[in-house]
Image 1 (cartoon, helix red, strand yellow):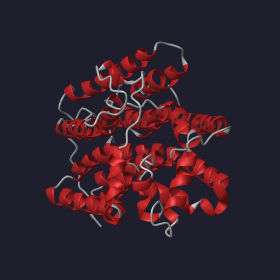
Image 2 (image 1 turned 30 degrees about the horizontal axis):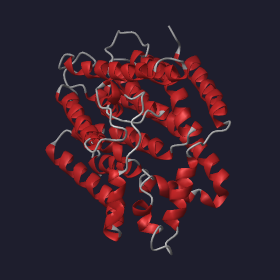
Image 3 (image 1 turned 45 degrees about the vertical axis):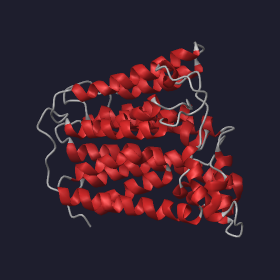
Image 4 (image 1 turned 90 degrees about the vertical axis):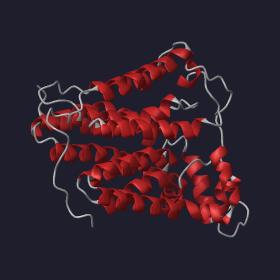
Length: 376
């Protein structure tokens, strides 16, 4: 049996080791954020700057909140801004694990604090290598913020705070549009009034961030049609989609499948799997195969491993470990390209199997029913 305190110390050391390893020659995608932040700040350029940036550079598939966050650190220079967000991004990963622990103490009192700590620490050992690659190695600030806001929004929703949950989930979309299916977490607010209020706040926050760009320059819609290569490693290839680049139906299908799986998880009482299933929908239909995509999967898997495993079961994070090994670590192992697509498809199909589990709360008791706090 792993004790909670030594496991936490081990996790901290593990995090530092991976931070140092990824920081060496890290920040490989930071130039996109530098480009976008500078364009956002260049209000005097009527063609490429300010609210015209997405129209002029559709390659910047980065939400305005993430670009603004990068811009706020630019007074320290490009290298300084990168270092700041690498440290803050690493801290965001630890914050997500802490929030998962807090959520577990809120909704899984049947587990006990010691078991929860063991589950979180064990899952964290699998999460942090992938997270450090995301936050430090490639420094994709948009995905970091989207996942952080999502987990914070989940906790707010479970606490019945409709306004806060709506704002956080809206900010997740403002950081990275693929986070839209996570808005289904608002259903955890419980009552129809709270859900409507949360949805209204989410809509307002998304509109406040994105609408000015579309109103200022209708060509901003170019960013919606930007395509990337359909790599030989993608699950799309395995599914028989051999288009050279992103098919026109692909992005809407990703969002629709993510929402459908999230709604089914909520309907079946498997709400801890919502994040996992929504990210799985994105990955299985994505023509890109960047390793940092797996960060969303391991966060969703950690939520399921900690919150979704019944009391008395092993504390080992099977879902998180499998995602880390099969979809991240395996990318460094020589094998046929198609094998990676099959591994992705197999993992996603296994995730979908969560939906056929008994229609009960993961603890073995009834669906989650608890008093909610004030929505303000």
